[in-house]
Figure (cartoon, rainbow, N blue to C red):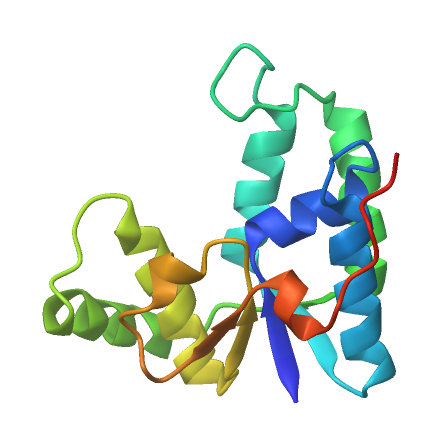
Amino acid sequence: MQYLLDTGVLLRLVIRSDPLHAQIRYAVGLLKDQGHQTVTLTQNIAEFWNVCTRPRSARGGIGLSIANTHHRLRMLERAVFVVRDRAEMYAEWKRLLLAHKVMGVQVHDARIVAAMMVHRIGNLLTLNKSDFARYATIKAVAPAEVSAAPPASP
């Protein structure tokens, strides 16, 4: 079974100073130990790059250099399969927008769900389960739900 890793999960996998790093690393490791494949989308990789290189002074920015971001991206690419975009995703995305009356920032989440549907990925590991509640075709799972996670690192 495949689990798509959302952007917040990707970021915390490679930012060791994040308070959720240990919990997410444990959850992803456990999924792999259980035989699940962890994947992500090119969209999530673009969002990862955006947040990593955004200045710390900007909302949510980490302020990494291009070289440091590229290094962390290469680490991710060794651990997580990047699912490529397919032409059918656009039509599915538009269908979801209309069917669920999606507006504003949620259009990005609808694109993730469209890709999951086209690629037949049923599970999403995310820190924002409520953003995906309207989509009955996928199962959004928080890292803490994978199993009892160890305490956060000091």
